[in-house]
Image (cartoon, rainbow, N blue to C red; front, side, top):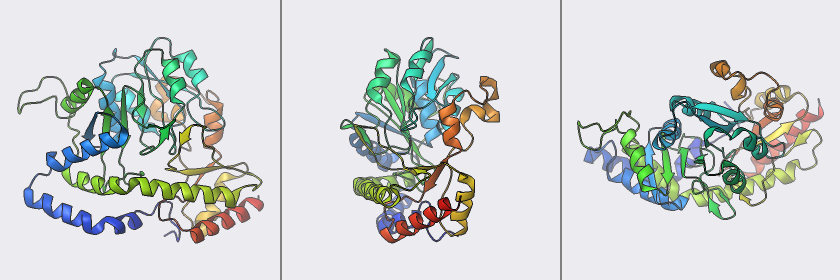
Length: 368
């Protein structure tokens, strides 16, 4: 067990335990375990938080991405432009929706979608899916320009509460999907997700498809599947959503502290914020120039919960071999995959814990 965990879910739970327990008791007494008033209330509150008109709860974030794509009724087999530097679920959802991932590289400084490459690949595509990575938005004004009228679907799984030029994650594209996996900034006590949009027709389509294509019991208007948010998760998410702005501010404070503690450390490149972004620091990932895996092992042995996100990029995963990409296709993504090291980050992270992380990391790097 790590003395300093990568994410401390117990600390967040301790802040809301009594509130959640009371909410669970009310749900258990009502017997409304699927959908119901708690889910509807969370959908209204989360839509307002994102600055859009509609939110639809889903069973998980991957389903949310798929439902967003299906609601758009895109041409079967059409290409969806997305960055190679992302969790595999982004590409999985594209395939599950009957579409084709069209991968592009990311920029060297922020590891967000390379809009110049996207501009080259968008011809003949049916949609663009930028990924808001690690807690900050992609350069959305440029993405919209490059999309040139194609629907933009935001993958906002790591950006609850983030904004760009004052405009919230989820409010830029025609439709956006997010995940409430427990470790997210807004995390459930299990799997959950949501789709947000300003278009009532898209929201209605998402709700219909995610409920077996049925708006009336035993009448199925279109082919769908089962992806509904359960009521207990809505109780948790409503409680956490009320605290999310303060928790995100605590993450910003922790990120600033890491910047000061690690600034100037030779062999370590710190994460950068794209100008115009309000970062919420879902992850704080540094780049280790020499022997990342050795540094990782040394910190783990010291009881520090560091991790590696996406050590094998999507295009090199065996499951996506059919896309035809080879090693070297996306050099920035591939280089980052061998260098990135994620440090502990959660709202309750203390200054003392961060000092220990920084000192241990510095000693490990200097030994390389």
